[in-house]
Length: 259
Length: 322
Image (tube, rainbow over all chains, first blue to last red; front, side, top):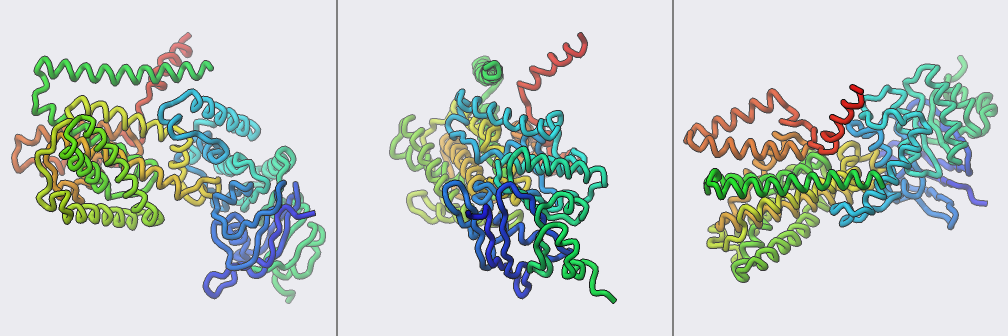
């Protein structure tokens, strides 16, 4: 049985810096995995490698689908997104000057086709696809209680709602795997609690695999089924939350050597 | 199905407005209110509208700062000049427009594929250079008449042709913007990295906007050549690109309605100021500076005229009152 996503010996060098050094990991179907590590450990770089934002120096990333396996390294980011890997960003990257609805519709662009001629001359088929798109987007927004804000510009939403919209937008691409980059950053405890529920809901309702970067350990420990710990670009440890909590190497990386 | 009918209604209203505009102008010309002087101004405004809406698509919606729009205009102008001199019929004129569009698309692809990787100021300089290359090639070819340009181009473009072309190119660009394609293009302007992560092929959509803008510029060039009957390479220099850019910025980057308003305002201002002799350029420049100081986002910002919203507003009020 193939793993849904198999990463082997992944390396990324920036000049002399090994940002990601020989990382091997895997994700299974419908699994919720966390990726933790101190600041500068290479977590976001690893995300960028997996989603094709930057190319890897060496190593391989392989996605197993229903019809076989697909290597992802060297593919452009939009192709990887088309294959079912979607993400949110550490510093929110919504389309700020566009409405909430447009943000979601844009993520559905590659899933619907409209010809140039029917679009320009407004054939009935154009209106049909548009209506289909809008209905689907509104359904998705309703699940996340954003249906009242469809016409609001993304930049005018409160911070927590912007994070939520980013997750909705990522889901609109119909992903198999969702990467969440510090979704709880800048949230208060109450918002974090809501977010925890939201992430569980996403995982169960959409049957997708989630890989999560997070510094909030209460969130990580309550959500994750498995945890990878990254330090100085390489994997320090992996295991269940309980194993990680008691792993001496992890404690050392986070708290430093005992005096 | 209800929605479909409603949209049909708005499209019919837009169509009626266009037809009404046509007959209004026709009557005014027959009555004599519009003389050949004003007609000349209206044609110039129309050509500027075609140029500026195309450039607004590239700058305002795709977010790619292009300074080479006059280069594509030159391609259309010379296509028409060359084709209509050998085939001097209305059919020849329309064929020449098509030839201009095809050549402009090829040129836009050649220019766009390497340069659209660049951002901001770098892209502006690269597109400016590309337009200069087009101008210099025209300047040195025999078939284009070299630096002296071309004369006695048969006149097929009168004001109805220009009016219809303004309508057609605007419909194409506005419908492109309000579609899946337009949303993809706008997402590239907003955030390239996020767009790419959402499955948008950034290079493809940048090119699509650039090519569509270039092909409408070629149409404007064809009309320009056929209406003025005389063209020279220096008509399509950097100053022409900048004057199109001024219309876009003044009307509001990202507002097609604004482009219309700015083209009309500047066209009228330019004509009125002709009585002031040398002071004209000073007053023109001061007017531009004042508008930029008091309305930095352009006359209309990103506001668009929408029949749909105008139609719904009174109805919404009625509902509130009752």
